[in-house]
Length: 130
Length: 398
Ligand SMILES: NC(=O)c1ccc[n+]([C@@H]2O[C@H](COP(=O)([O-])OP(=O)(O)OC[C@H]3O[C@@H](n4cnc5c(N)ncnc54)[C@H](O)[C@@H]3O)[C@@H](O)[C@H]2O)c1
Ligand SMILES: [Zn+2]
Ligand SMILES: [Zn+2]
Image 1 (spheres, protein in one colour):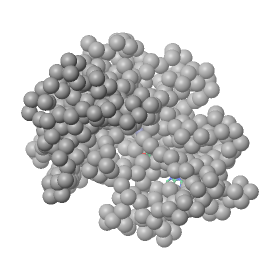
Image 2 (image 1 turned 120 degrees about the horizontal axis):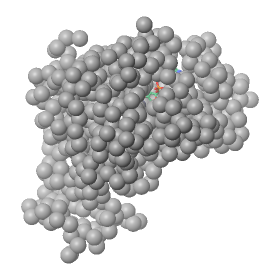
Image 3 (image 1 turned 30 degrees about the horizontal axis):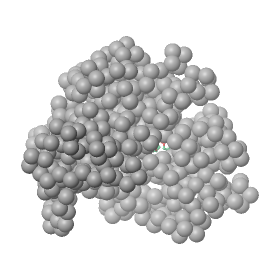
Image 4 (image 1 turned 180 degrees about the vertical axis):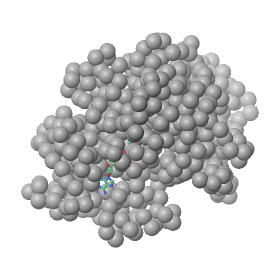
């Protein structure tokens, strides 16, 4: 297959996410980023508040409420920026599993020039938007 | 090391790539003994899964030996022979705790692709595009396994590599198809697709007490494998009208459970197939829905349709009327392997479950492009080609 097609395939990925992000911006109705974490509210507030959550609260408004039916806690963060989303996801992972899963630095074969250029951007978008 | 990389639509190459290292404290590095092709890879090859980039390492169904563990790995040890689940779970989010591991909240570092496309992101999968996390796959000499305590399972000594490798994906997927459909004594179960997944669903259905299993496909070698190895009655959809035949075989009731193990690239005949292909080609629908429609039409009133075949987007002409008016239950999912693998290895160890006949083409990793050609085009009776990175298996393709 031609090099052009390969580049196109890599570009489609970025295009798709970028378009989604653009759509989201236009119809932006969400103020808070909210995620449910499998932890009791009392484990996340007061003296027990984990450092990761405290750090998030330095630049964001953070609200912790009990999720219904013993489903843990709903952590809401405002403003709902991409950075807030990425940070909150990291906090959730850290609290639930003890680490934040990485894929950067993984084994990969030869990237095309376009692939090298667009993949990091696509991944950044893929981590941040929703 | 050497690894099989996706380089473009229907184009794969063995390349020299850097060895993987530990990236997280709960990772392990596994030296790959055997790594299988899977029907799911065909959707990547054919370009139906977006978010692939040239250089991505393929492969997700594999066994190997643990050669390195991160400081926070406590259950797995260097030297252990393990089978690794194709779908990655964290083991501690609500979904993993409930046994719905492929819904894991924490193993897809690139969630926006799926959140945008389907509302939420599922778990990461080895070698399965950046939308499923962007994890390097197992068609390589070594692979990094995240959350190793939860995703790598020791293989009992008396279970062969050739059986164990399929405990990673095909066996638990087939098992889940029957399990989520609540197959039980007396049931008649019809299975579309006699690939690895369909055949394992047939075995599972019998082990759960099904009275009759009916297998549907068009390749004679696959149909006879389903008959001989899984004890199924067989239907060739090119020679018989499947809906008529199923009614006749079930006293007019229809099967109690219909398991679809074909997926979005189903093949067929007649105007409906032509319509599906044309629309999919123009990207007006993403997935061809022929077998799905057939399973829904065939299913008895009040029965269960269990969808294992992978669909990624939209299916046209979905017979919602049949779902409502026949009170059908629709079940589906990417496989929750971790929930089943220990039990499946035990059954294999007791000699009650066997999968090695799926392995029709053992090959060296260097021959992997040839292996995919055989598998994709169902040449030379290929049901699954399995790559052995370390011993120079003579290519069965020759
Ligand atoms: N849910 C999961 O977690 C999971 C895991 C593994 C595989 N899968 C999916 O399961 C499906 C099967 O996988 P596989 O590895 O067995 O693939 P495979 O390609 O080996 O088998 C598919 C079979 O379907 C048959 N088929 C095609 N059109 C048909 C039709 N109209 N009627 C009946 N049979 C038809 C083909 O002839 C082939 O034998 C794929 O879609 C794959 O992506 C899902
Ligand atoms: Zn698979
Ligand atoms: Zn999880």
